[in-house]
Every structure is written in structure tokens, then in C-alpha cells.
Image (cartoon, rainbow, N blue to C red):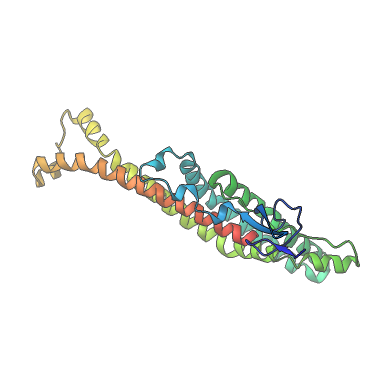
Length: 258
């Protein structure tokens, strides 16, 4: 029987495998001329459901609001990753001359892919994009030094380190800033009419401020009617934007850890 490979990541598979051990793809099989064809159905390769919803249907998707929380959490998580990577690496690298630093640096590098589980867990729970981090393998044969050296060949160690050191915090700041700016601005436009209620409660009338008299009263009435509608449309567009930001960020994480 010919060899079987996952068409998603190229990893060699066993006939009895139901999922790819490397990328987690689920398999469907068809027997054709006594050979087995493997076709994975990978959620990440399909178009994410949130990218296919209608313009107003975004409000009915529960993950829309989970995505907002996900984008906000990227900032503190990015700060933690950056602080952990810089502090541990610089400290342990400085201790290498007394040998204990080499041991601590080794365990620090091994910890990086496991810390990324927190990121993949958030992507799975909040966004719905499942990632399967590449596990670190420890050979059974060889000396302790050979086993340690082999375990460090895992590419996810260095891709995780690069993400934590270079990408995590800047991307967290960008996504947090865009998300908060879009939502706060659009909500401010939607509820601009509250200003009139406050003014009436204090002054006993509306449009009493001097700057209102620069333009006709009809203009301000029209503006206060149109602004909430414009704010609602802009909020809907903003939710579509944040959904895409969350999905694309999760797919970046998926590529880094796989």
C-alpha cells in the first residue's frame, strides 16, 4: 500500500489515523482501486462562519462579542509574553558562564511552546479557530546531552520566541487600540442624542448654547436624527472589521504553533 500524507501539512499518516498528529486535521476516506485517499476537513482552511454573515447578521452571532473580548485580552497577554521572553532570556543568558544559566535557558526555551497553549486556547474558545501546537519530542535513546539537543530542534520553540519577543505586544497594542477606538466612537455617535436630554435637564430647553445659533435650528435637528443612524451603520461595519481582525490573528497563531 502506498504512503499516505495529510494534504494540509504533508505529515505522513497511518491508515488507521482519524486525525493528523501534526496539524489536527480530521480525515475522510474513500477506497478507490484498493488504495486509500485521505482528504482532511480542516476548519481553518474553510471560510470562517463570521466572515460569511450578512451585514446585520453580525449582531446575532455570539462570537462577535467574544471576538471583542479576545482582541482586548491580546494587549495584557502580549505584555506578559514580551516581559517573560525578555526577562528570562536576558537573565539566563547572562548566567551562562556559571553553567546554571545554560540549564535555566534550556528549560526557558522548552517552556515557550507550552505557554503558547494559552494563546491557542483563547483562539479556540473565543474565535473558534483551533490550533494544535507541535509537541516537543524527547528521544528515548542517546545520552542526556543528545536528548536535550534533539528536543531543541523543534521549530515551534523559535517561532514562539519570535512571536513573544517581536509580534505579541505590538500586535496586542494595535488590535486593542483599533477595537476600543472603533467601538467607543461608534457608540458615541449612536447615543449623541443623550446630550440633548442632559441639556434639557439642566437648562430646561435644548439648543440653548450660543454655538448652536451659528447654524439654523433645523440643521441641528437633522444632525441629531442622522448621527445615531450613521453611528449604527458604522458600529455594524466595525463589528465586521473586529471579527476579521480576530480571525486573521488566530490564523497567524495557528501557523506559528503548527
